[in-house]
Length: 317
Image 1 (cartoon, rainbow, N blue to C red):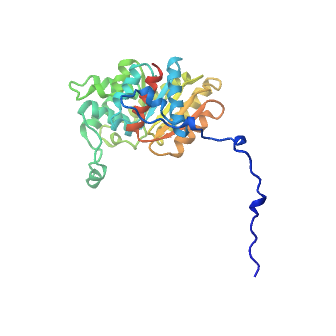
Image 2 (cartoon, rainbow, N blue to C red):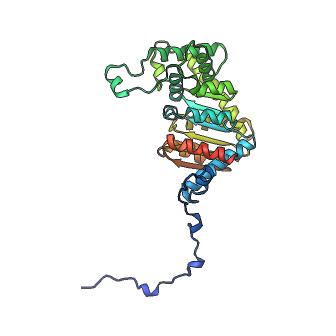
């Protein structure tokens, strides 16, 4: 019986470790927490490795964009609003950091309900059994009537909702509405509807013409805001797996089509609980192929968004 041949390890050629390129150095390691430490110490104590490095790079990019008066566009999915992050987003707008807030219809619904009624997010499975899911009368009627009024006034969908909320006789928590805050601060806030995908579209008061008109106006407003990304702006996609990445790609196309290929040289980041195809391709990769830089940071919004906000504010001093 012939035995299988074995490699002769004595013939292997080695190299001095000093000549080898190493990806990790001891000085890149994390520092342990200190009692009474500051945010700056926490950030400095992060390891200069992998996503911790990317996290700080994104914070630096947003701080630099704010200092240079470049656009900082934050795109939201509904989960971001209903996990209690409104105050953090409003603070970033009040500081003049976020220049445009774009969201899908789900985020707008949660924002509207929290502002008007003080609660949101229903039990989908329970409501689906008897057909009551998404059938809240006040939410559906109030929002759809806002769109009709907004169409008549040439408002975008986000603007129409902010105006309608401001006209309500009693609001449970107006201070928690990102739409109302944006309207008050003069920050563009746009809502990008997907017909049939949102609970308010199944309401008897739904008006497809008003939904389409106000949301398409917001698409045009987003395309105009994207022009400000050129030369150092930042786009942050938080929690939208499909709608906002698709809308952003088309709005970017419009901006570059009418702007001789600009904007270029901006940073994008997808921040979500898990990685999806569309955010990776439509936000992180394709828009930054020729210039700029794209990042993916994976983590729960309720932890990562406040951490990023603290890092940005710390960077701005």
